[in-house]
Image (cartoon, rainbow, N blue to C red; front, side):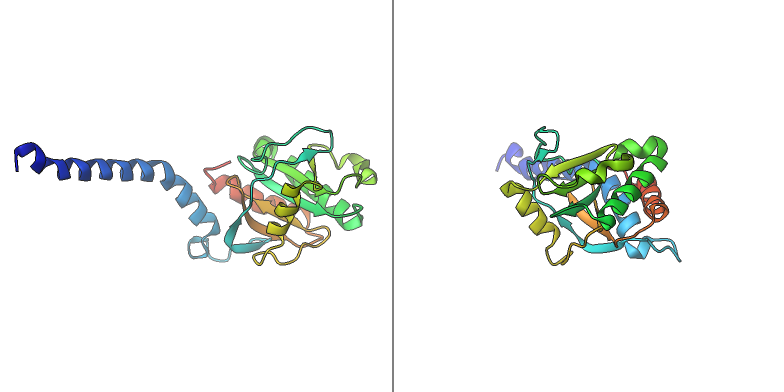
Length: 206
């Protein structure tokens, strides 16, 4: 075996270590921020989030849907930002309207961090005309569920990690497209705001 052949395994090992180091450099902050917020062992003593934490978080399928204004939404529209998600399969009743208003107030109260959060309503076409009263639709993305992608997305939201979708329920999706938390109907805007404020402070994503 010549000298070049003898050095080859060392070169391969060094390059592998360099790749691992680069991966840790870029993914380390993400892993740390997720652990700080979602890892119960690292949460400050006495901290209680106001929503129900889904453990493990549930990856959602990519879904290319159509918005209420006719605009095509890319398959990644539930990614890159934190999403306050609501679902209705019929008319937007009082519970749905209350959730829309609570998410609107909470998002606006985030001030400069409001751009890191989006509000999304998944609904059947023709739904919810009455719900736009009082400015509840301001800054809201409404996506129709009539396409196959929409049905698959709702099925994923109602999977074992979140077995039942309730009218007026608010779901929280992280910027990686994972369903991470759900809030009971009637959750107050200030409770949403407290969780979002803490989350955005700790998060390195979205």
